[in-house]
Image 1: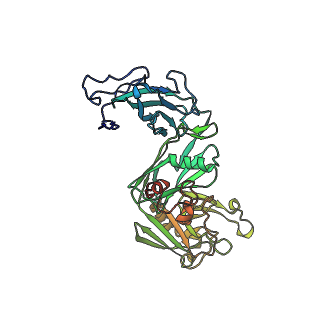
Image 2: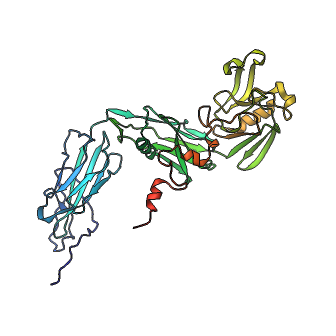
Image 3: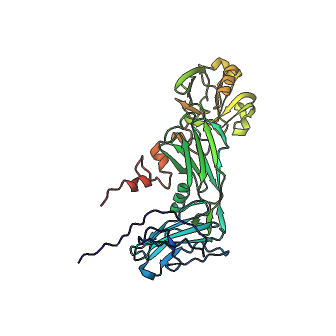
Length: 416
C-alpha cells in the first residue's frame, strides 16, 4: 500500500505580525493547505510568559509548548528584543517544545513569533510581546580615546564601572564590544589589562586613512549575578597617514617616515647614563607648545635638578618623556646623549616635528641602554607585545589558533 509522505517544508509567505490576542487571517478555501496565509495558532501553542503591562523576570527562561491540537507541531520560534537581538533557543525533535538557552535581556521588550503546522501541513502563526524588568545593577562601558583623528598606532580603550573577573563573563563582554573598521581589518583582539580596563589593537597598525566605529551590544545582557549591561555611547575614530619615527639612541639621529617614505632625518640627543631613554615603541599621547619641566616632578633632585621652560613638546609617556626643543644642548645633537630621558633637538626641528606629528603616531626608540617601554601603565606600549602574547590577554582568543576566531574554529570543524 502506497503512503504519501508528510510534507514538512513550509513555503515562505508574508507574515502578519500582531500583538498578543490578535491573530493572522485564516487559510483560504484553496484545497492546498499551503496556499493561504498562516492561520491563528492560538489554540495550538502555549507560552510560559504572559502578555501585558507587568514586566517579567529576565532570569526566567522563555518556553513555548505545543498543545497537540489537530496533530500540530512547532516548526520555528523567533524571539527578538528591542535592539534587534535574537534570543537563542532550542526546539525539540518532535516539535512539541521550544525553550531559550541563554538568559533574557533585562529592561527590554521581546516579540516572540511562533510558526506551527497542523497534520495537513497548513502553516499557523502566533505572536506574543512582553517586557522584562530592568536590571538591578548595571555594567557601564566607556570608550576611549576621545572622538577625533589619530595616528595608525592608536589603541582603543574600554573602561568598565564594575570589575569583571569571571572568564565566561569576560568573554561575553568581549563578544559584545563591536569594532567595525573600514576598510576591514582582518585580525584584532581585546586584551584585559585588569578587571576594569580592556584595550584593543589590530595585529598590525590601522590602515592609513581608515576609520573605526566602536560600539557595545551589552545593553540588558546578563553578565553576572544581578548585573546586566548598560547602554553606552558609540565611538568613531579616523586615522591619518602612517607616521613612524625611529629614534636611534646610538647614532643620535631620528628618522621620520610618512607612509613608508623617509621625509626627514634630524640630529638629536637622548637620555644619558642613569637617565637612559626607554627602548621600544611608544604612541604619541599629546602635544603642548609650552611646558615647565622640573626635576622634582619625576624624582630628580640634587645636582641633577632642573627647572626649564620647554617649547614644542610632544609627549610619549605619562611619566614625562617628551620629544621637545632643547637649545641648551644643541652642541650635543647628533653626537652625544645628555638629557634626563627626553629626546631633544633644535628649536626649529622641534617645531617641524610638532607640526607633523599627531596623537596616535608611533615613536620607536632603538639602541638605548635604558629599560623597555612597559606594555601598560605609562602610556600606550601595546605594540611592544608580539601578536601571540597579545592574544593571550583575550578571554575569547586565549589558546585558540592564530588567524581564527572561536566562531571560525566552530565553522571549520570537519563534518562527522
